[in-house]
Image (tube, rainbow, N blue to C red; front, side, top):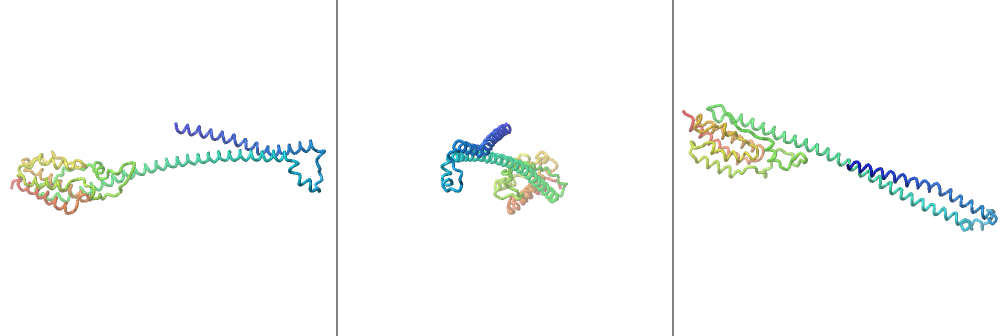
Length: 293
């Protein structure tokens, strides 16, 4: 719709330009012709009174007063032609400025489109880079910490939704606009309350280990669920099932995610060591208490 309106306006400008260009040409070529005609007519009708002796100074001095009418016509025609020319030029300049403005609008639209595409690509690549980093860290941590419980092979039930985690870590980024390009998250972005987490761990450690069950773990589950960390909690079994080893697995996964968050820069090193120490201690206590000797 806007394009059609623009084309109509452009056609109107072209018609107006053509009209005034024609008028300018008419006056431009008509000015000397009309002036000459007036000179000839005056010379014809006043031939008996005209002196053609160019040796007389009076004839040169009185030329402008003698041919005042043709000169006046010429002056008027020149003035009118100049005004028409100036108006035509103003329309032409206005038309050129409109064209330049349209070109600038098109260039701006193309730039915005290219910028939007670039932002989208950067957003996808940045999110992909975070996902790969999380997967790499998760793999390394699972491999490293699988030996903590030596009685059985460690089976992690930890899943991380990288897209949900990304939204939580970089809410300022979007497919339309990229603000943060780093993968190392500033400490100011606190996605988990360390003090609350510590209190929950210490309160849990004061319980009878035989009473540690799935219900005891839900508060931890909910704390991490908000930013895409999912403990497949039903996979851990219970303390009374298989010697309680699956519950111990939960705390190994817990330790793994703490390390991953540390690697992303979300938890200080001192807090990481303190939390991991307590988590591993609980896992080992559950393992030692519930596995028959």
